[in-house]
Length: 211
Image (cartoon, rainbow, N blue to C red; front, side, top):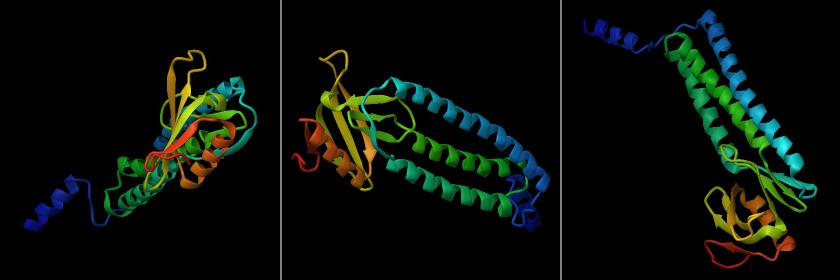
């Protein structure tokens, strides 16, 4: 009797020790994930088109190099692990219902979306300034080297946080902040070009001294 009650409880939770793969349900789940992918990736493509139009209005010289946000790699790596775990559960543990198949597929779509956003929204270092947009929010920002008043570098375990304090392009009395995460190697490249292109002081938060 106890074994029957235990089995009934496991069924109620939608969990089975010997889940059966169902190709028909998987096809339905793929269709749902496809619709979700169209919405998610479509929004990413639209955002990139808008950014490209904004870039045409920014005159800061030619591109020198592009820098990625290191947090995007961490997020993608975590999501890949989550995708693997959910895929295993969907195929071997959970009951073959459409939701069990849709969840890992949706995570896979998010992996592609974040990877694309990280690539599209790289920090652009140009001959006349720096252009970038946070991969998760915010608008496209452009900072000319002549606008930079001071820079700060906060060294963290996995990356650096670089903050540029710069004068507003129209209201010279207003100071704005441009903050981005960079790898340790990328930070050195940015600091080098800032020191060669501006007279602003660049401070290390941990040392309190100019690099």
